[in-house]
Image (cartoon, rainbow, N blue to C red; front, side, top):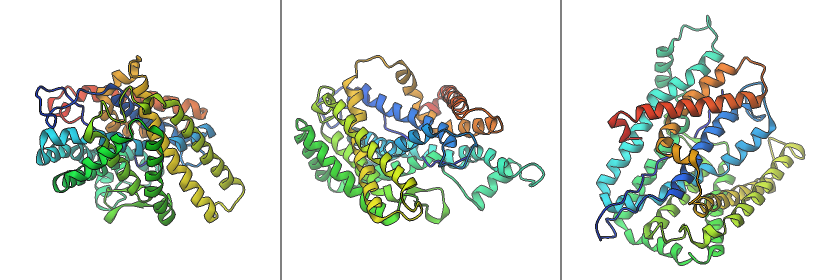
Length: 405
């Protein structure tokens, strides 16, 4: 099975009483909740189908359509999740203060991260170990495998990489907020100033994406992962600045007002959701054209420099367009009934944390069958979503767990 390093945590906003705007927690914004939950669903889909892609090295059953799904997701969804997560930071900081804010984030992000790397990921990757170490070729039971993972390696973090990066960005935000609070507020006011000029805001965000991604991509390439000391603290090197830029953009947007700012339900950005989606599809088309050229018209291992630059530009532009399009779609249709996402929302974080176990075990279960890739992926996805959702709902009945996820 293929490891995919991949969500989410942004605290729910609760309604409180009082007149001090720095202490008021805005009522939860359903549209942004849905956008975040939808990305969680995309994460589950992504991991369910990635084993059945042509570029992967997993199951023999493959379908080219899954390559398109994985390429689409990977080119935007985690950057968009960092943007959405940043939206809620200022409200929590203003209510709790720096120390309590970090303590809360450490509980909501740090504890699940530790549970993931010490418990969940070893359980998840054990079937992979069994696949490549058949019975009789090793005496490793699970506990031997677990100890070897921690002491010898490799020690994968799986999707939990998102949690430690998000925690680090939250800590950095608290430091900036404490030392130079006017910096974030000034950025927020600059964004608010273009609330009614959506094309200006969009163009500025395209520039932010290009500046934060293209140089890093050209220097490090897209396959490099930074993993200090071999510990499970990975991040894709070329996307370090991209994720940080999106997160702090989200923080700045949330500094002023989520309900009346650039992501207002009746705002100009939301009204132009189809325009942002159109741009995103055009940029994705450029990515597909470049991928096709890479596979058919040039040396695959050594593409020319112009191709590297073009792909980096297309990636950054698509990521920015989707970061506008996805929230705008949910904001524009905030009053629509979306039963699945609304039902899934309370369990979304837990589903993200535990889904990888079910993904790999179900992939392992169907591996030897000669079924089409679509059938296998459907079984893995449906089984993973149902099992992860059920397990999360059960765990949330435990008070201490419910306060965490």
